[in-house]
Length: 239
Image 1: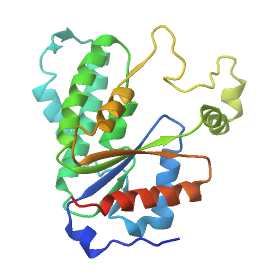
Image 2: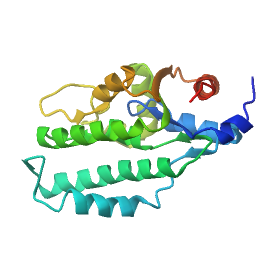
Image 3: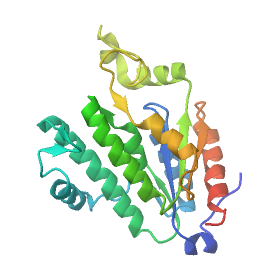
């Protein structure tokens, strides 16, 4: 297997960001942790973005957006406002962290794009506010070289992985639901921006932001090898 290294070209070209996204239980964090332990030398950073700037971003969000009672013409209860402040702040902090990187390859877990896709809204008001914010955030992503890798896994495999993760106590609960959030449409279903984000990225509306898919069949070594080949192939393209 080819052993990729941080070449002089990579170290002097504009920073290149990679984020794994996908449904809960698709193996994103396991894959990133494996790459960090076995192939971390190939990247400038592997893991969660340094969030020392999170509180600064949170203060900015509160001052600029949530000092008024309504947002985009909608009333917000305290619960909705608190949840949105935290998620808005994490995405802004992630983008601030992006802006501080000058060169190299950065493989991110819990990066701003993943937060954007995984956040669940409890009602239409929350979703409209969240959607508008995410569309504006995607515009900011167009300033960076980004590869979004959507990790896919068969639903029955994810259900089995979740059962192993949850353990016997939760399995013994008569109310245990083997499905993940967003899988079983029911009245009052949580709302996600994930599918619209995928369509927007797949349309190549943003010149420097690419999206590809990676199927996880459970062999982490094999999946990591394909992920690394994908990352380095995109990174080697001209900025």
